[in-house]
Length: 454
Length: 80
Image (cartoon, rainbow over the protein chains, first blue to last red):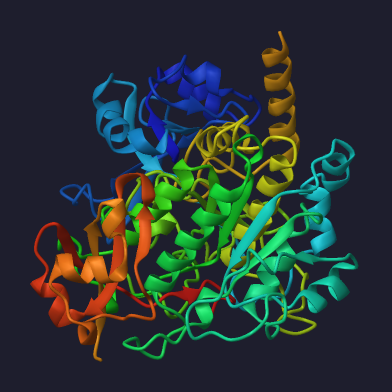
């Protein structure tokens, strides 16, 4: 968390900060504060003392005439720093009591003129995403997805559309693809829709991956409502994917599962605390099978959701903590969204997650001109696009690092560790551990390979 | 068939069929989504899921567990 810290150093230091012809530094003002990473690039600012203009005025009210004093014995100084998100409450409470220097600690929120939101035009193109993901360098080292099964659990894939817009052949594994009961249609032959966008985005980093088409969102199972699918179809799909994984040779298992869907509303769920609840309950059958599939060696990625505070999707109905159920599962990679400038898109859901506090895990690129699945001028957007972009990166890595060499859990940790830190020091609820950094990830794997050779 | 829910049941390998699960849980064919079938959740633990009517779900007793919600799921995009 970014903070502003109000200090009252000695009058000569205050005078130096206030003097227009001098430039005092943060180091001149304080030699450090426990738990605070001071921003030494920030020039300290003298803050005048405000007092009621008339005797007997309320010292806390702004609704009266005030006089301001920059006199060294009265003024204070502001410096800037960061506190780790998970320590912010305790630190902010304890710092003012630490010594006479610290007057107060205040939030320093990000101010922006225009966050990327749902209706914003595309920010960059999929080629920019490829450049940011260092795709040429990845491919030069053999990280291209060859031999890796990449399941897209969505509305079905139109392989011809993906091929035409990506300019590359697309492989769909018909044998390992799977339809929910009652869904007709051939793998790779579904109408162009959300799933086609997701498939396109997975192939930016991993064009040689083999797509496994799993159109769970097309289900209209009896007993549901007018929605796009039911969680029970996802349970059945993951059981199928477990069979796919078990059929792979143990020493070369590589299955990446991309999920750009979730539950927007608690309306059809049972309330948290009830044994049958999904959103907050690790014992729900879907959350169990997610853990089981990951344990067997699959990399499972979920979109964090589009319920970010700045411009949330109108369907968002959870009153808070919108990363729910499997999207917040500790054994999945929850993916938030940034635009190609590296700024978090305003709709990307913020943590903490419901099953696991530290969500999202990382961010990946979204809101770029890509598949044109929704029209020529419509970007690939939502954390729906960020998730398959990250899944493609994971699939590229799996080309040379199957689950027998680095487990899904180890790979997630490496993604955390190598992510490009954003916003605050370490983990934060906006960006997670930061933006997935392909170059840093590959460098870390190179070091790991060298260590294992020794 | 009205609103449906999920229930889970542990089954030994020899009884790991939909019929075996229905027998264990005391369910009739009318109460079960037979097209959904018996879905393995954790093969190592012998844990399975069955989709049943809400009423039948509330009747389930150990070794069954539930009922668990079967909420709708939607794509996360494009943002609306």
